Length: 240
Length: 218
Image 1 (cartoon, each protein chain N blue to C red):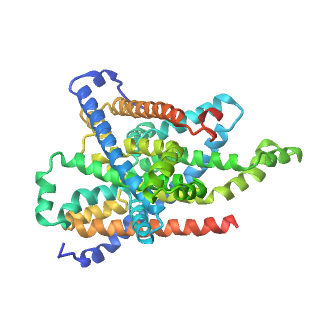
Image 2 (image 1 turned 90 degrees about the horizontal axis):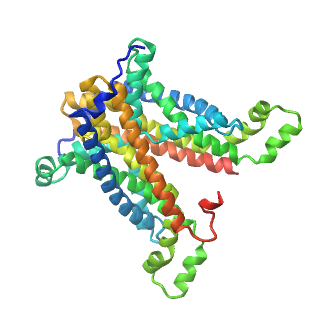
Image 3 (image 1 turned 180 degrees about the vertical axis):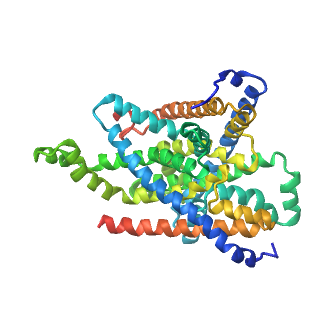
């Protein structure tokens, strides 16, 4: 094994700046995508438990569509195909007018994809609540949307914090797919450092350390959130 | 969109099939390697010998916190360096997938082993089986029986993930479509075809898993 070590390149200009700007975009894209994913996931997840068959059907199609096509293919569809199949003026805007096209494409792609996953968690959270609660809420005179807002969702969200955490971490990891459409996020930047300096080991080690740190920090934060919002009487972190 | 040309897809079929073959070979090999690696890791994680258990746990958590693309880059760079000669992208990504998937399969298999009641392992011990024998003949067969649906679902995820070999240019299904898309300037036709094929294969796969799940449950 022949390799010349030079950890110094990691703190040299311009490479240090590249890595930090990559980290910045990874975080920005992931958080923006999470906001979309959480919103879509909540709506679609609730729709999946609706008593209206049409609403349920549309929500199911959404989830199956986004779960059964590889994320990379979805990324290409959003970036290369969408501008061609929408009305011409909008397509032209997507191609030329839109600011930061790579970033917004990645955000929407990751958001809609993860939304399907979040929807499944929300659905299973709602379904894990006993029917008695729904009936009791209806019996005291709440309207269906109030039942969701005041009774089902506050419990469901708290139950599904652990799987939601792993979906949230998934977005950070999946944001690396943005590099295929030219988004200069963390993985793309470290690959660039590796190509410019031939110090691939150091560059990838830096990326690895940063991803591991992101995971670690998110897990710590979510553990606190989980403990704070634990529902008394259910198996929680302390019991493990 | 008006000039969607099916002929482009039809003429490309043989080339696409050769790509699909690479995708399937990668998927199947990675599933087999991942399940074997995952089983070994799960046994290590559940071992009463602490250093081994921590080592396996560390490996699993480490790989699970990395993006797959980065893992592919790592192995694409490391494998030729360790072997000492270029061995081509295919084998590098294959090793990357086996190592990466082992971490995910480990967690599934660990949960599966833990779902087998403790009495079973004790009964094995009472009959005079060694630890290895009771694992091999009593615990693991039952664990795998419970896990089959989850293992297959992970297999479908893996099948989708193999498309990421795109980043190092291995000729899988997506890359073959991409080559023709760019050569003939037929992006819409080729990407749509890829999306539809993946969608149909994964949907049929999940349906099969669901049917199997019902059958195993009874």
